Length: 91
Image (cartoon, rainbow, N blue to C red; front, top):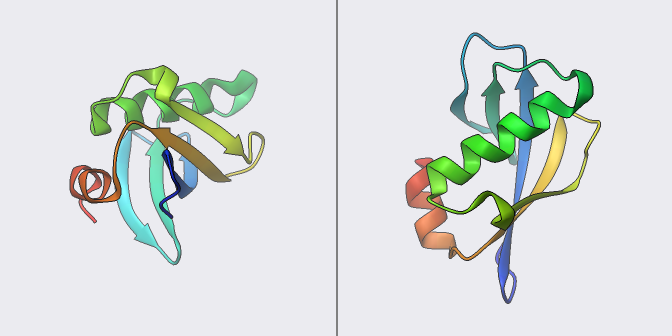
């Protein structure tokens, strides 16, 4: 989902996993396992850190645009194009 200055990435976050990992495609979303629990937004913070590290972006360029309290989220990525994001995420 390429926009003019950003990408939107649809993910399914699974908190409480044994470790943080990009699991791969799940339907029209990217399944991401997060070790942190969902309480207090800990899983959201860990999700942003994992995506930023994987994509080589500053954390301020990775934002949850919808789904803060839901496992199904839309992530806004700034400063990366579709080809680079797809390659880094193994898609």
